[in-house]
Length: 427
Image (cartoon, rainbow, N blue to C red; front, side, top):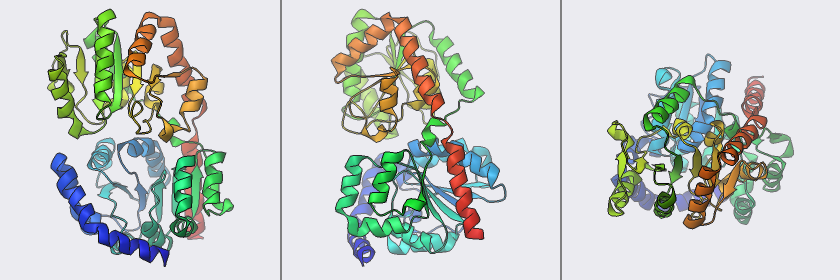
């Protein structure tokens, strides 16, 4: 009954959801309009039957899931994998990371909106061997219909105290949802206890750690970073990655302040969403800050800012920098993943709002691999101190990389959970 009420509510909201996705988001990013029928459960006939379906909400989840998906390709060598996303940038990242396997062993689609008719058609059409969902993409209708067809496995699961309290208030829909989960691979004991408190059976829980720690850098990524660094020369460089509106203005204010004492410093700024590229460029021009776009593909001269307006390059761009600032943290967005910067062994600075990565930042901070600042002024001061103290800066980078190294191994543990579920399902 609870799910039916939830479904009716979504149906009532459907015109507004479609208007938002197609007209508003689609007006900023044409990708929201492309393949729109998939969001309603249509246009799926090109996808293989009896595949493993892996759902990654957007770019961050795709990048985190890439090592797991590659391990799944090797382990389940005769089974295709359908990767679903919610955003066009996530879809583009899938197509980029798995370009050589696209439409051969890897297939990509939007996940239908969690409407009863759409998710039922999606599951009935694909008849998946398993549904593997990253993090907290917990959809009542999707899980209901998937549970009737295949194992439903939530991996890399995390649940903050704030999110737990929100789910707890809606126990009428959360408890049935938990019963439809076949297995849940979780970051840590605390998160696991919260899922159990919401109604997950304890025997379905496995603590694996976070697969986001299982980052590896390819030779090509190292080479790209080194080549750009050589092109830039000996200038001090800091990179602000995954920045948001109202945040990038603060970061550029910090950079202007830093330039007073460190005039040779270069800022590489990489907005989180492509629709922000033009806004950042316009603001740079208004502030009379000299800049060059990454997409221009021309050598840097004396520009003060390099605008990272290309997709899927942030992971290796961190390797060009001496210091990384991780965006979404000076404003209340909960922060973004600092581990790509840690993989390059560079010092990390963040704002105070990091609740989306509460499973990562405490250890990074305790190990002195990262530093918190509360304002653009504090950021400018922290950058100046680190540029002036190469020993401190390099030690922070070493500390961050050590935190990354000692937390790796979650991919293999998660793969074991998936294998066990498939084995039980086929028994």
